[in-house]
Length: 425
Image 1 (tube, rainbow, N blue to C red):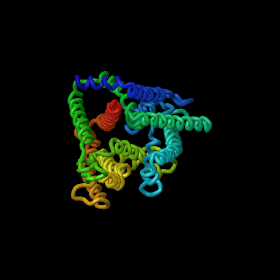
Image 2 (cartoon, one colour; image 1 turned 180 degrees about the vertical axis):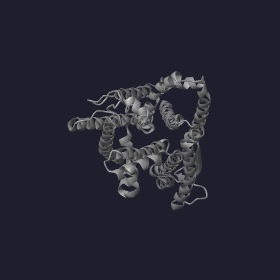
Image 3 (tube, rainbow, N blue to C red; image 1 turned 135 degrees about the vertical axis):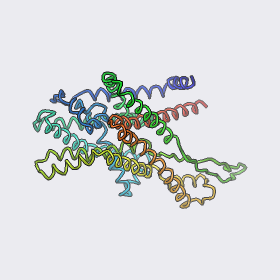
Image 4 (spheres, rainbow, N blue to C red; image 1 turned 60 degrees about the vertical axis):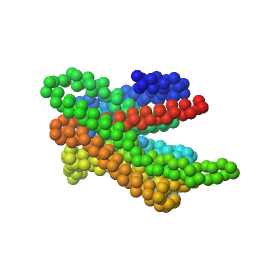
């Protein structure tokens, strides 16, 4: 009853209600766009092709079924995520870009985002051309003349830019991360079809597999919730200050440091990186050179090994958790802000010693968060090894994203409700 009352309270706040309906409307628009195919392409052969390829099946899930329809948004927000990864890598190389991203305020963030949007266009063009060329050579779609191919690539770029724009509009409403919500909507949109297929193909021999899947489902949900909610509280004390006849400070509080500061972003980044060599290998197989084809076959065979793929997935999740935390969580800036407000960590001197202390704490708790997140990410692969079914592989990754996005969205809605309560006073 308490949960139902809180849910109803959300819709009693006019501004919050309008924001939620606006976000839902944009998600519906994105799903409608996923049903519009690019011009001049027969999609009748696509279904069997995507069902027979685990790689393209995974791509199709994260595009929300848009890829299997060869829709105008077939690439989803993949090119934007790739551009974002490149831009954030550049912050580690060029101090001027890092300064723009972290210390230039809202105007600097807007300029950083503008550069990311511009970089999205060439990535969308390359990925769109590579995908269409691959499907042509596999005889999945008819051969396209240069004009038709150019037109379709322009439409694909426009679709990616359109989805990116929708994602930014959603983010501005502060009801969750726009890019994550678009991926979430795509995954959820595929659930009815999967449930229908499971029902039509149900066999009593599948019961043990379904039980294992449900157990993994509960473990992953519990693990994601535990990691997302865990935090280390660093005590902060404020010295007493006397101004006139008033005494300020003298209180104690704490600085919450989340175990998983990066949220679901490392999973999305890791999947984007893992999909790239597979797409490259598939494209290289079209080469007329026997040597290039041999390298492509070796890459495919190497990446198809469950242990190798799982180990790479685990490693990338851990690396991107550290990387994204380092980019978004500036311990020096936090230490400076605490010092300016007259605060200090008990037993730690202000300035560089506080920065070093925060770095040590963040490294330790991020290690625990990164290893836990990586373990949850590869848990379905471990189950697949013992059960021999590939269904759990895709389901586990998608579930990890869905749970994380739901938690993040719920937190942002809760913060909006708290702000509304404060405004009453």
